[in-house]
Length: 547
Image (tube, rainbow, N blue to C red; front, side, top):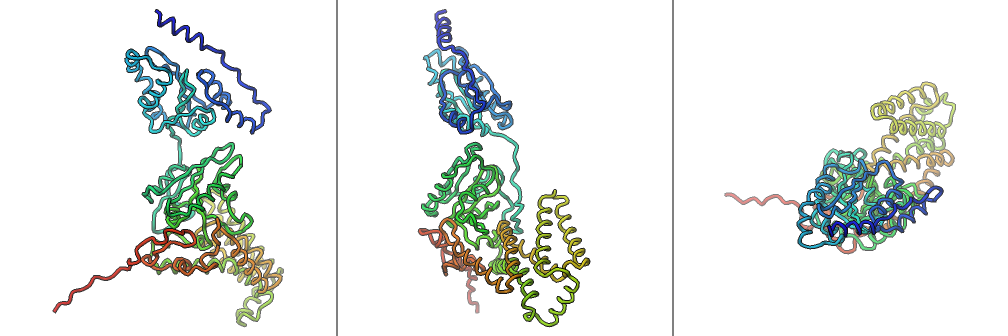
């Protein structure tokens, strides 16, 4: 009877009216964020519940479960989670089930000694909950962050703290084959939208404790998690610090894709050439980390950023290292030639047909002249018309559904080209030139570089149409000067060609055999140059002399 009266008195003494929610109508976003960040949890469970509902606007996907902990004490406990972001089985087996199942055991503990609420809270964290990860927090801001990321939050009456339990379980895409960097030989898995799955893919390739990950929260509203990955002891500390500073200095409301991060941290934002490599292949990122680079993984996107990079990085595919060096070298050389053709072929055609017909053989000149007979436009107008038409078809093929997109692109190109030639709007020779240019532009293994070539073709055509080959040379000189001035996180873009680093020429336009690639790029690492023993050349077995 005395115990019952004591509990009744404590309950009456702690009883408060539920605080009225603050009216947030007309309050700005910055004020709301400041309010949430300034609030701490209190001992009263109802007040904590009111604060959480107030901060979330009493959202319809917020799920609350009121429980009683302890057969004798019957301590009020509140479990919260976001509907659709948790695994119900994990929630029941790891959190709710243990709380209800330990009630009889707790009554025996109470018979021996009286435990305070804080001690019971610690007991629940260390011995009762079965979740793989349990975090303790005392601020409303951290509690809400755990909640909206798929964790279940537990609150106990009389304790100004909360426990965030790992119960995430939402629908997501499985690991699949790459869509933009297809390889015939090599790993066939690609990153997905889950950041933790992506770090796991890297761990499976680099099974070393020196592979370190650091997390950042970017975006005042979205709170997007961004992770940087590097190999400690191999990467330069100054590079890691530079990446940290650039990511930490981002002040923006929302980050949806790694492209947002790329634009906010790149060295040359006005350059037509990408200075940050974007890839969806885990093996390519792992190889970059082993060269002393840093990877930036953004939650919600399958594309990982790699810094620093050089121009040569965009002409290199992961498959180059899986084939024999002769095959890889030939393919790389073809890519370099294709890049040059994609940039200069239409402009060279315009310059030669308009200003420098004497450079062509007589028979070819007469053939082109016969084809252009009756064409009402000059060559520059023809070239621009076909290039714009090709870009429209390319964009339509990308945006249309996969079932009809490729068919529309192929059929549209054939019909448009044939109709334009039949109508006398363009010459058949120029159609061949533009088609060859389109094929060459897509040989680049990195899509962002091929887009840069597409854009640069238009000013090159304009220069060729006004100044001839002199305009083409001026355009190439301007591009080369620009490339020499661009840097990627302090590394010159044209390394190892400008500045010249002869020790790195073994892995540029051509690739030497794997057993000769015994050093890392000196432009990236200053400590660990050697990556393998120099005595790796295969030797045939010695044959014993037989008489």
